[in-house]
Amino acid sequence: MNSGTTTVGGGTIAGVPQPTYTTPGVTTMVPIDRHLIESVLHVGTYERRLESEDENSGTWRAAAKRAVQDVTAWVEANRERLPQR
Image (tube, rainbow, N blue to C red; front, side):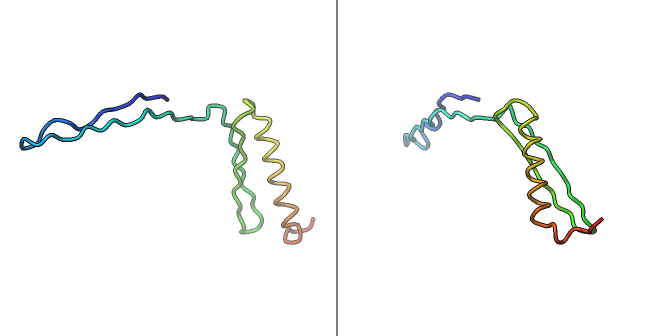
């Protein structure tokens, strides 16, 4: 979104001239190629939420790859606490 400058103020109050302020134009960047995968890991009563996202590739593939990396890293870090099968 791009908005131009805005002028506010001015005029007079009780015969006293008021200042005029001009705000600079503002540009806001909003990602449009954002892909987010939310995962929930349950082990017994423990629960861990993970958010894996990608904002640049334009496909789900990068977000899915990050989700696999996030879950793999969590399992490796917590392997000794996981029940054995």
